[in-house]
Length: 331
Ligand SMILES: [Zn+2]
Image 1 (cartoon, rainbow, N blue to C red):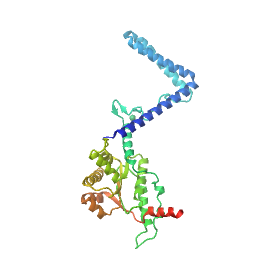
Image 2: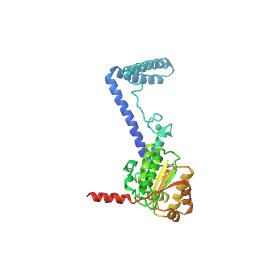
Image 3: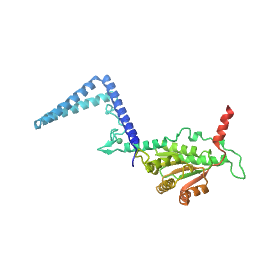
Image 4: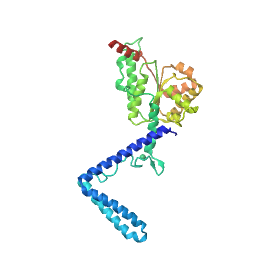
């Protein structure tokens, strides 16, 4: 899967921060220990000197074998002495060596020229981060969701908007709490300002905290990125489509507000269909009714959504308007 130069550079920069941190901290532990125990510093110097003597002996050829054995012996003794000094000081045997974030590759990102899993993970995270920059996650946790904004008046024998939204809210909390690789896909329908984006981002936030790769944003932003890459108007070799197809959770906000073209419709169908086949969860929010979705995207896509998504109808009055009115009232 292709990543843009920026994503790669950001991941490598994070690796080098990790490596530097580990080495700086080891250096700090070493100097603290040498202050405490001057003999340990002498040992360090002697070990460095046996190392250079060994190197010279190796170059001296065959006759060097007994000398090398002797130096090795000496080195082992020094190591043992250092270990016992460390233990006396109440430290671990390996207290003086860097504790790398990834011991496998020592935070270099590569093992024998092959990319380490830690770098793969960082690249994924960075790719998600760069896509997610378009939508801030702040202030959209479950805690900030206020059912009090929905009316508790029932009309025509239907449950009140508050009761109805209370069920959706509890479902979303459960869904987020038990989120896993093959959670169900969800379709949030209803007019603007009823909390669809809020609840989908609250789920996104919890899934991210659990360590899942989540990509969220408006359909409009995603399709612009796809179009740029598809029609070569982008200077990076980013592969947005691959990220959208393969992330653990994809949140498509505001389906139906994007500029409609046959390319966009085909790309969205491919996204929805491929993710359903792979049993990867997607959460779509839209202001459009089923009839409007059908008119806009055609039967093929809508029947995939009907068959594969759990549908939720958001009801009530526009919360954003109510909040704005409250703000004005306070002035
Ligand atoms: Zn690694």
